[in-house]
Length: 496
View: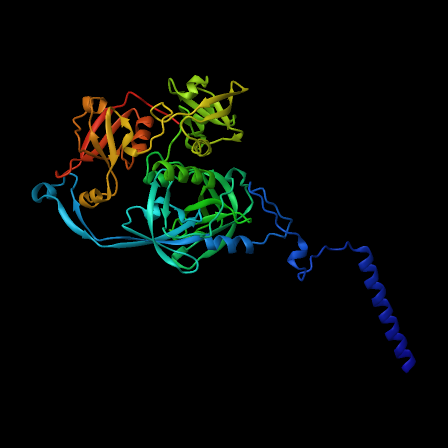
């Protein structure tokens, strides 16, 4: 009985072994990666200054990039004192009967982020983070806090430069070449969201050359060619760093696309190449030097299907040239209406943001090589860029520009407080040109908007003149209630 039982058990065991062997022999082997494999044995990330750093699959490690970036990103806090605000009204009956109304605007505080870009304490952040602030402080990752001064700002690019004095050997971040950023590459967003301590989030680049229109609220000459990512960014991240896995700065976080005001999947950063150009100009001249080819163009994303088809935008790559300014660099190079600009200095451009993003890094007087398509033929030309006045002069101060035969300057902080406004351009001399001949505007008039777009700087005024044939100038005379409107036909149109 025992022998029979043993035979049954032995036969069953042998059958099981043979079955397992057959299954393992004929079934394809799956591929596994051991969870215990040390990261160091899987390969290492090699960093290059041109942002071409690559890593083997599964080897991306954010620790080094995060550790270095956190040290170079600061918490920016702002304060605006209480102000007496005068509501000058817009011709309403109450203002006419009783005069301007006054009320106290309480003190306000705000916060954002910034990136240290030099060992001696220069910091880049967003213009909208420090706009109208009467006091700015920065807190480093080690919790050291000090006051910072605003060196200069540029609403068009939403860039501001801050400086902390008396500091040496501060950890700072190197710029990468943002042209080399690739869709799909890993990135980190570093900043101080929601008043938290330094926070790092990760994502990938999901698009390039995006425009949201957010900078137009600050400047008529807005430049937007954002890097779009899905790294989580929230209020307070503005001015913080977007870095690659080598820890290099590829952008300054500026905006989010959200129906609620909090992160909803997409964030946007100003490319490092635009930031670097703006920062250098602000530090050297006090204002950003805008360069133009002298063309007006159509962005295919902003026209109807019928218009796109009629112009051939649905079949041809590049940016369609609508017109060319006489005497401009583009005109001298032979560019004509109907041409499609496809490259600038070897970089492909297929939309308005991409074209603006490329031209924004050059100065008046620089030469660029462009590739364009004309009637199906590929051609190229060298164009000397100019400023909106058609010259290659560098404007070292805002007030040095003479437009419409008049001179202007931005309002100062004391005037902002006195007039209860946040922006404006003062006519310092009406001159004897178009402004004096075609309008009753006199010296001292404060221009606040043109065609309902805010005017903060001389660059804004230049852009308004370049973009519009008919101008409606709005503003006021200090000491007198009410907003005045003047119409002007602009005989000198302009372009990019």
